Image 1 (tube, helix red, strand yellow):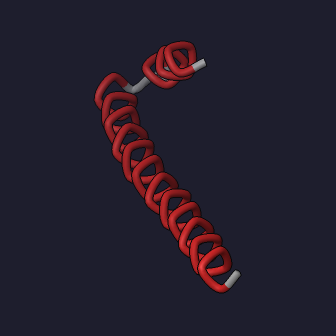
Image 2: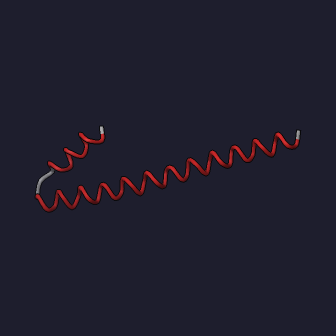
Length: 58
């Protein structure tokens, strides 16, 4: 019975670590994409790149 509890704890820890790693990876990716789109908007002096990016992501 103790082994089952240990395996359950390990499974929960792996799940939480996966969630945190996934969140950090997605946060980094979308922060970088947002900065690229913001630079493009600034360069073009228009919001068209932002709208294009929103269409691409949806």
